[in-house]
Length: 258
Length: 114
Image (cartoon, rainbow over the protein chains, first blue to last red):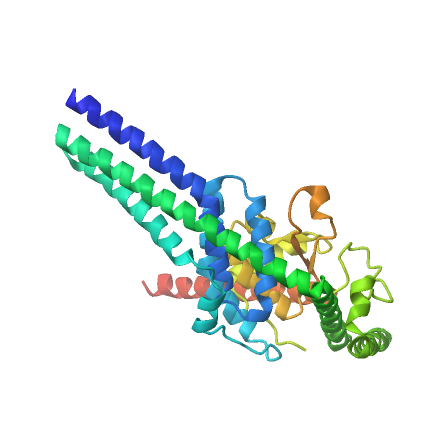
């Protein structure tokens, strides 16, 4: 009877721990990606955050997402090295103080709660597996541990919800103050910057005189446009669409300009 | 002009896959699957090639709400990148061939000595 009880308990607990872990895996994956993104230069963070999150969404299976995130995190230092070797990209490190300021309250406790719950559940499973004989006392201890783990996870969940609510309040305030102007302005500036980089890259790569002439013309267009953009009223961008490229690329690749 | 990227076997493997269809666009995960590399290890290579001007990348031109997923970042060989990649592949091939010839020559000498 004891052996049957032990086996059943171990199986049930393992299943619970695994399913719990699998349910949390996508969340952990996103967290890992967010941490990995912090290791690369600031100007590339938005891009890679978006790119890797899209890749995570494309992967099927909860644990596969976690594996992908781990792979990305392991390779983040080398990506950072590759990007930092660019002479035109200044490196700005986010200070520890700023990071702490930006992090919503409760995040650290939430992490602690997750770690504690996983550690306790795994510890419990290992203890159950390693114990040769199951007594009523041990089962009671195991039950109490499970209750404790559940309580810790509930507290963690509470903090996650609370911090998310706090986090969501911030952009709302900002939006009401700026009426969405800054976002559109930022987007248009980014598009212009990308176009400018592309134009200069094309100019640098051009070898044939005709190609060089065309690239120079394109670069000059972008420069003029950026000068006009810098001198124009920022509010203009919020009313209309962001400045569109004057000449669309018709290379048949289907890629966006930039 | 950006300096030529560091060539490793993995870089060559990525380039070989992309050279199969130089006009095709690939996203990171797709490249990793085609090359057979661990997913995360492809991004440093793509970053290196992009910095060197061999690749260009752009966001997918779709509406996320319409396709039901986020926009992907697509990578594509540039014209000069495709040419440089072909050159790098043939150089690598030649260097491997030369090494093999040397090894074969060394083996022949050892066999003759014994």
